[in-house]
Amino acid sequence: MAEFTFHHGGVSVPSLDEAIAWYGHVLGFAVEKRFYIEAARSHTAMLRKGPLRFEVFEVAGAAPLPEDRRHPPRDVKTHGNKHVAFRVADLEAFLVEMADKGADVAFVVREAFGKGCFIRDCAGNLIEFVEEPEG
Image (cartoon, rainbow, N blue to C red; front, side, top):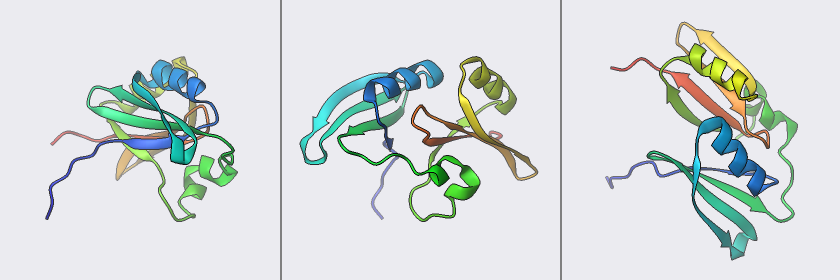
């Protein structure tokens, strides 16, 4: 089987500049490069935080995010890609940091199988954060 590693996740947003500012302020991503994709009519940015990359698209004439895609329990009832997830060392500390930064926390899970949360970016896209013990 061919070897591969994860490269990036991607989201479409109504405002590239607003998303760049949000991902920088809330999650600490910086612009790696900006470019235009002619075939998609998309102003695009690749954001980076250490080894993590996130591609953000502003596409002319794009439809807004449907309301059900903004709520994790409803979102999973529609086929298709759902979200990207990142590991955090301490969910409770992460939630305090997100509150301090004014992030929109959509859903928090504290179950026997694990702890995590979903936040919404400035366009309503869901991003998951999971506290997973090392080892």
